[in-house]
Image (cartoon, rainbow, N blue to C red):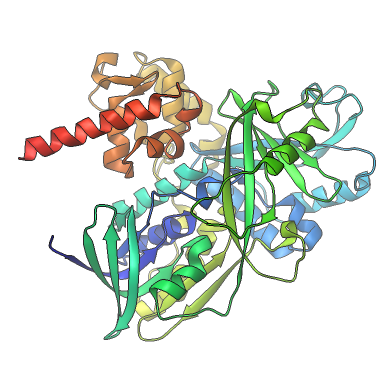
Length: 514
């Protein structure tokens, strides 16, 4: 098998949110970019978040004011850029005896409201849980509480859409491609890549970015001649999914006596998402999974608040991820900073390593990362992502607008009217997943028969082919659990059937080429 050779300005290692964001930013500045990811996009940490675009209310008590302010600013920037996969969410915090005094919570919420300018999100307020809709599922002893705003995000789709935008601006996205070795030679990085099928690729890059998340230090040690002075602290966060616990649109934030908090969030219409844990992790990063103690902890804490007791037997799905946090002096895993750090080795061929970060600040991180490497690449293009929509988010034109967030339901209704031959619930799902790109997926189709084979209830061949050809999906897990969460809704044998169909499609393609 012949070896393929590629050249680029920037080689990005890692297809999580930071790597995809950096690839997008760099490609938009006119730099040639190659991104390689050893698995699927968003396979690990970036699809295992609590799925919030938030400032991080609890970080205020650790005096992380700069981080919170930066995240609060980004919260509305992101909501405007992708209103299909992000939207505002109101949180309810029940107040119980023995917790922080009410005046302290009010002070914290006042600061949260005013650390950054808000256009889209209403401020906080005290509420009477005896009359508020969110009080009904709670135990009767919770009589008062607080309500405040943050945002929700489809985290895995956020990664994919950044990669899509990067590719449309010229970047080459290589999934299931491992960077085995990278050395400096003649003022460039010479990187040896290997695909899952065994194909060897050689990439010659003027600059390399290590955005491998939890693998950042490991990558430096095993694939490059570099070492790092920074230490990562790996923190495992786990979540459980249970059948829907309440009918209203609010989310909850519950406080634990030890200072930790747990969210209970409306999820995928039929479910409630509960998380997260914060524990130090020392195991295999490629095989992170929830354990029985974490499940028991999340069930127990939630049951302290909800009238209905939640037991481990009611968990229908769970997921875990490892957050790569920059090591500091904090003894408590929950107190370790979520801010990010860069390490720039500015030799002939620069190497930038990204440490830490959180999903809310990915765009700012990417912008600052490209700012650091641009001078060495003689690139003077200004920053641009704060004023640009992500693919599908251009509901009212190419520039982000508040009305795209506020009027998203009207956008859905318009699509449902235009494609009245599709079931309204299916069109609503397409609108949320693909935004304006739903029109491209449905282009030329006039009746349900034009959608191709229905591979599972509500999953047609046209969507699967779109995900394969436009979003790098290759298997059922990519489609059912990362590009969507249809795996929660469809029969258990759907993945097996879908993989068989995909294998058949691939075989037919090979026969056609023969």
